[in-house]
Length: 93
Image (cartoon, rainbow, N blue to C red; front, top):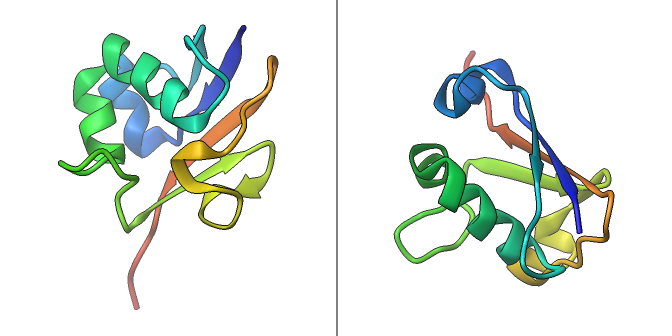
C-alpha cells in the first residue's frame, strides 16, 4: 500500500523540506498513515498529533479531499494511492 502525504511549506521544513511524502503504512486507516509518518518524521508528527495520539485541534487533515473530522477521525479509511493533506489552521486578523 502506498499513500501520498501533502504538506504545506510551514510543515515541510520538519520533513527535510519535502512537500510530498510517499508512505507505505501498515494498515488502511489514517492512524496507520500517521504512525508511518511518525516512524520517518517524528518531529513533524508531534506537530500533527497531540500527546494522546489524536489530531491536534488546530490541524486539518483531509483524505482525498474529505475532512477526517467528519469522516471517522483516526479510523478514516485510507485506500492505496490516496492523498492525505495536512494543513495547520491559520489565524489572524
